[in-house]
Amino acid sequence: MTRTLNILLVGYLAEDAEHICRMLRVGGLCFNSECVNTIDAFPRVLAGCSWDVILCDDTMSELGAERVLSHLATHHLAISVIVVSSHGSDDSTAYFVEAGAQDFILMNCCMARLVPAIQRSLKQMETLQHIRETQLALQKSEAHFRAIASNLPGLVFQFLLNQDGSKSFSYVSEGSVMLLGISPTALIEQPDLFTDLILPEDKVSYNELMQASAKHFSTWNWEGRIQVKGDPDIKWVSLRATPRRSHNDGVLWDGIVMNISRNKLAETEIARSHARLAELTSYLQKVKEHERARIAREIHDDIGGTLTAIKCELLLCMDAKPRKPDFYQQKAASIEELVDYVIDSTRRIAMDLRPGILDFGIVAAIQWQAREFSKRTEISCQFYCDSEDIPLDADLAIAIFRIFQEILTNISKHAGALNVRVKLFEREGWIFLEATDNGRGIRESDINKPGSFGIRGIRERCQQLGGDLYVNGIPEKETCVIIQIPVNGKEQ
Image (tube, rainbow, N blue to C red; front, side):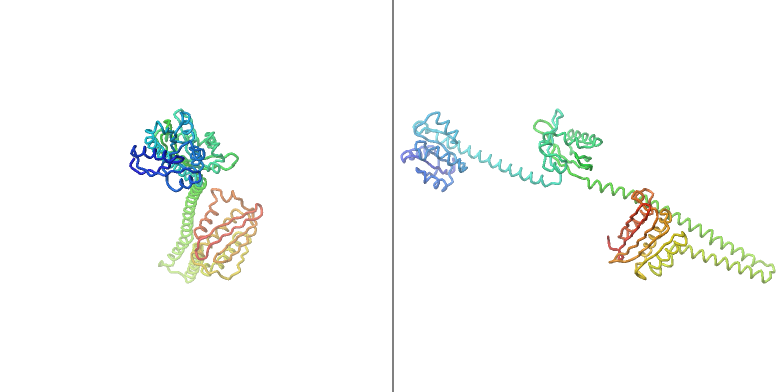
C-alpha cells in the first residue's frame, strides 16, 4: 500500500484501539485513524472525513457492528467494513458478511489476517465502484439513445436472424406505434407482425435483400409498401440497417424504418409531369409544323397563285401585237383586282400570325376576338371589362391573347354552347380572364385525359408566366375557365 489510508475505529476501548493500530503498523500500512465510541458522535465523525476502511467491534450494544452496517446501508455509503471482535464464531463470520461486512476477524487469534483483509476489501471496493460507474454510464447512454430514438421520425430497431432461420426483434422504439400501429412489446413478442404488413408483391424483394445482407454482411437497403391494419392508405417505407455478427453466430442488424410515402408521391407526380410535358411538347411541335404547313400552303396557293395570274396577264401586255386601248384597260383592271386579292391574303395571314389589334391594347384585342368568334361560329360571345385599357408588356399581352384564342377554340370544338360570357379585369397586380359557357360542362376525367392538350397547354403557359388555371364545370349546364397571371411577372 503506497497511499495513506483513513481508518475509522468504532466501539473500541482505548487499549483495544491501540492494539489494532499497532498491528496495522507492523503490517506496513500507512494510515490516519480516529476512534469513536458513542452513537451521537458517530454520524459527525463519519461525515467529517473520507474514510477508506471502518473497523468495528460487535461487543457494544449501543454502537456495534450491526448499527454501523445499518447506518451505512441506510445512507447508501460505500465504505469497507471489517469486524474485528474480541469474541465470536464461524456463525458470526457468516452473519456479518451477509449483513455487508467484508470480513470478520477475531482479535485474539487472527490479527495476522487484518492487513491482507483490508487490502483485499479495498480492491473489492475499487472493483465495485468501477462496476457502479460503468453501470451508471451504461444507463445514461441507454437513456440518451432511447431519447434520440423516440424523437426520430421513424422506427429504430435491432433485428436478429439466427442460424436456424428464426427471427426476432431484440429492440423496437416507440416509433412503431406511429408507423406500424403496433406497440414495441407486441412486435418483440411476434416479429412476423411486421412482415404481415408488407404487400405480397414486395415481400420477395424484402427477403432477398435481407438474405443478401446476411450473406455478405452488406448494408440492408429496402424500399417497399405496407398497409397498416385499419388504414385504407398504403405507405411507402424505407429500411436501412447495418449487420454484425451476434454472440450466437447469428446476424444482428441495427437499423431504422422511415415513412417515405410523401417522397414517393412526389417522385410519381414528377414522373407523371415529365411524361405529360413530353407529350405536350410533342403535341405543340406537331401543331407548329401543321401551322407552318398551313401558312406555306396559303402563301403558295393564294399569294403564289395570284402572283402567277398577274404575271400571265402582264405577259399578254408585253408582246408586239397591236392592241386596242380597251384591251389594256381590261388587263389593268384585272391586275388591280388580283393585286387587291394578294393584299387581302397577306393581311389575313399576317393577322393570323399577330393581330394588329394588339397594338391597341389587350382589352381591344380580346373584344375584337370575341366579335370575330361570334361571326365565325354563330355563338354569342359577350365581353365585359371595367377598364378601357390594361397596360401590359407586349409579350404578356400576346400570351394572354393566345390563351383566350385557345379557350374559344375549345369551346367551339367541345362545349356545344350557345352563349359565352367573357370578363377581363385587374386586381392587386394580377390580371384575370374568365370565360363561362352554357354548354355541356366538363368533368375532372375530361381535364386529365391523355388527349386533353388544349387545357394542358393553357395551364403550362399560365405556369410559365407565374400564374395558374382554374377549370370548374357543372355537367349539362356550364364550364367556367379562369386564368390569373401576375402583371409584373411575380411568382404565384
